[in-house]
Amino acid sequence: MKNHLPAVYGTSLALLTDLYQLTMAYGYWKQGRAETEAVFHLYFRNPPFGSGYTVAAGLGTVLEYLDEFRFDQEDLEYLATLTGNDGRELFEKEFLAYLGELKLEVSIDAIPEGTVVFANEPLLRVRGPILQCQILETALLNIINFQTLIATKSARICLAAEDGAVLEFGLRRAQGIDGALTASRAAFIGGVAATSNVLAGKIFGIPVRGTHAHSWVMSFDDELTAFNAYANAMPNNCVFLVDTYNTLEGVRHAIEVGTKLRRNGHEMVGIRLDSGDLSYLSIEARKLLDEAGFPDAGIVASNDLDEHLIVSLKQQGATITTWGVGTKLITAHDQPALGGVYKLAAIRDKQGRWIPRVKLSEQAIKTSTPGILQVRRYLDDENKAMTDMIFNTLGELPETTSVIDPSDPTRRRVMPKDTGYKDLLVPVVAAGAAVGEQPCLTTIRTHLQKQLKTFHPSILRLDNPHEYPVGLNEQLCDLKTEMILASRKKPATHEVDLLSRGVDHEIA
Image 1: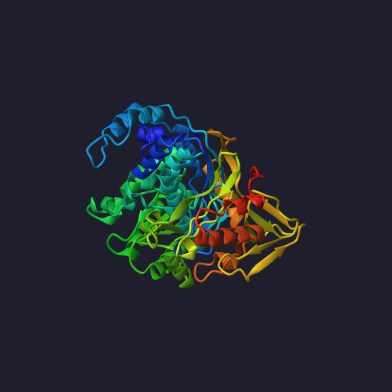
Image 2: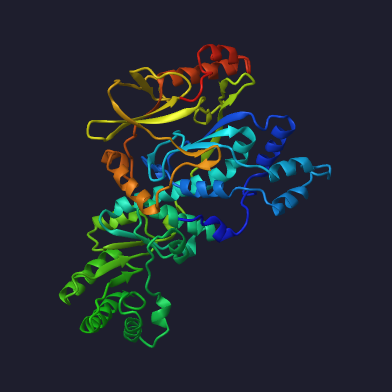
């Protein structure tokens, strides 16, 4: 699938960044440190929606963004107009010329889209010249945060719907044009069957669905005439919206028109309920449809649905077969942001040695993890996920390792050397060039469905989910603790001790 970003925007997106990324880049350039090699990790600290799991999404868009990355002449001309507090130019002309010739050389390892992930696991590991890694931060967070959020919400809704199809109807309530497009993409990864967003269908190849609105019915003298007219216009796409006036009378009108359709060689697809007591109305509508000889006619429901309301309706015995979910999916209504972060974790010194870096905080959750990290998912004999271990690739892993809960070091699990596993971060960009072919959205969607089956149902439940174990391996836990203690006692003087512990190796 070709890149959609140029088709939608038709311009460079290099300025899709916060100003401080460019001021830092300028500082690196002025100090002669632009080419210093560094490693950053992108991760989130808390799962959204109180969920027991999160769905990684947005990587495909990231790769398109990187492929198109450039500062064009208009970008440089705009940056030349920016001034500091003294009214003078913010950036030197020579720096702008440097940006104009910039070619990305970063390498990125990423957890594939559609993978189930957890808090503090790096979704992206970005390695390269520190100026380039820094400039990319804001856009990477913008893309990954939102799509991961929406894919997770979509997965939760689709799991709640069980065998019922979920349709994404959120375009009109989405946060702008790009919010609608990227949310439709992420929602499909999460499991929705189709979208009402025709542009998303064109760009991403997502199936599109839709019939008519209340305005169609209201534009005619009566409901039956409206249904007949729609059936004459589109006999192969008849889902009748029956709640414009009297819902159950509307079902009877749909049955009358459906009978005419059948005589003419067509079949009514179903009806849609958009208001009222959806449980009661769906049960009564099902009775009417079955009695009239339409047992295969579907019942589509909409009206501010989310995963919790869907579960409630199913518990009430609702006979809804398809769920149209709009506002609360497309806007991630109950949590509008993921809160992912992007932190420096290692930097090369002048001797070419890797020096781990840690960010301290009064809040333990905001203290970063040093090193060049990888995520290893341990699997049992049935290929079910057991635990995830974050480890530092600088140095050797022992054959038998302990996975330690970073919030409680007394909680640890020993993983025998013969335990099966899979390392989740895989190369996707090498020295600025994409590695291999990226899967299509349908493949990513299928990957997620397979992923979800590898986790215990208690982790997937909507409320009070079981906590899936994720921790640091023993050596990384020790390194992080030593760095925190050393930084608090003697800031910026602990590197010699760390180097003596063998953290100056290449990435394993």
